[in-house]
Length: 488
Image (cartoon, rainbow, N blue to C red; front, side, top):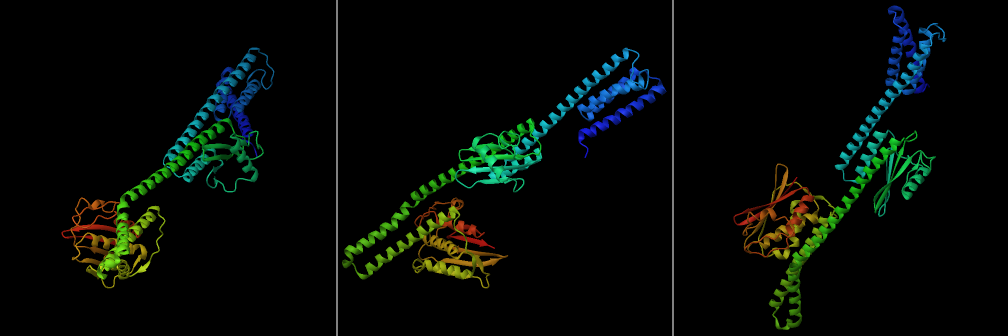
């Protein structure tokens, strides 16, 4: 197979031959002087320098001198020269040809170098623009690999080494690294200088490896696989890519750390808020239970059976209240952490309501509960334990904020493929300015009756309904409130 340089030499010979024939025709037809023919050869040298390369232009200049002498200088068709002045013409043609070839070649090389730098700058800018919109380390590394492969036209690999988790490997071509290649990459990582092809370390391997000094918790190696020996400008471009890659990966790790720190601060704030918000709610039933048990222990003989029964019943209700509060706290922490998987199964709405009623059996014994479930209502896909907690909290809310002699209503019906579940009380209602805040954590609605709660029940209801891909809202009406749950 003919190489590019040999091909250029053949083209040069052909062009010199064509130029010579054309000049002979012009010389015979128009009787132009040999000095003017020199200009044609100089024009050829310029064209070859522009279109081919410097060596081809030099060759054209040398061939031009010999063909000019052979065909145009008396005695013709010989290399002899009778007129000494033509020797000056030969020297001038040769020197001017070389100078022109050198200037044109230099100009062309500079133009190509500028184009390459422009392309490289454009590639770096394009990569940096994509990196600005990326946060995840995997996505950042993939962007770097793609841009380097497209710009350098070679395979690229990045190895990331972490202090607190497993190492990661990213490559544009799987299984590119042999054991020796990995050894070279590890050496570059440990000693912080390039290894591999074109260096003094592991020069027999095909890859060229540079270390990535990211953060104190992470480091890495970038390797490229270029078949030919790396040029100085290519090494400079690789260094530019490494600088961009290091900054982007470091920014990603710092963002992750900042996010983790923010989560820790939020958790600490949440714990503090929970402690401050429910300390009273926890203390009140505990004090009541402790006081009742202490009174029964010391003065049980002085109390009638009815008084003892009332005290035990009151303590039992306070214990249930405490149990619900602790359950709400546990569910809130699980929902907050996202560690509560759903165990959805198909249930009849009446069954879900029945499970919730059984949990409030003692409290509902003295309240009128009206249940209206539409006939032939489709089964609903819910986590029974979680979803019954929604109804328990809504019923507990209705009991707390309505008078003991007013009924509580539960309705379930279907409209246009959506199942609705309503819990309605006949209490004092909720003011309009409080409705937007009801489902916020630790928000306590203020009313003229009822005790303020812990501010956890309704946020838990919303969290559980959201997990079931449903919605929950509240309507305040004259003489009560209505909570409406809807889901497909």
